[in-house]
Amino acid sequence: MVPLHIVFLATVVLTAASGLAATCIVVFGDTRRNEGQRAVAEKFAQIAVIGAAAVTSLLAVSI
Image (cartoon, rainbow, N blue to C red; front, side):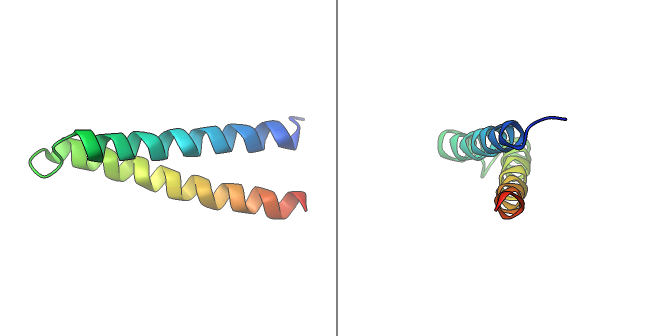
């Protein structure tokens, strides 16, 4: 079985990477005119929110 701290670390890294990617797309891209960039940024933001919920639940389980 995989240790909980490895699962937690992977979840935190993926959450942070998704949030950073969404932020970079919005800041540096032209999301007002480009529907594709907007859709990708929204999906990355959704992944970051779900990841934050997963981190919270992992913290609750480990306590």
